[in-house]
Image (cartoon, rainbow, N blue to C red; front, side, top):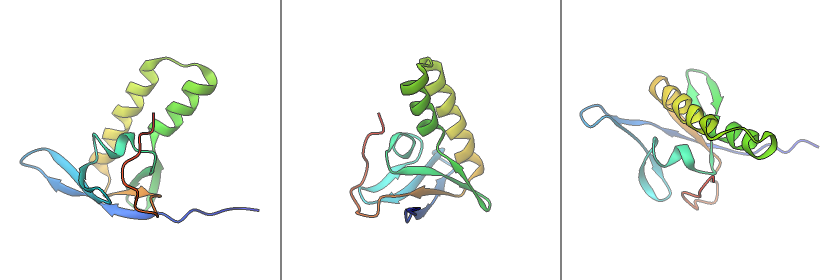
Length: 104
């Protein structure tokens, strides 16, 4: 049996003057770089027509199962920033409107 999770697409609101990218979250307008990147609900970044999975989720899984170093988390954060630069929205599975929840 396959369970499909519904996700919301939260479009980016870019402020080039302040170099900020925000989305409308249940908690209000939040920074994609400092909030979504470390939120349990973030499933990835919409880049064009495809969904790029959250690099932090993969890195955290590797950290727990393979014991990789902290540098893996840093590389995941850098990759997330690159995806946000090229992307247009966050895919969020917060269907209950709980807002930010720490990933780790």
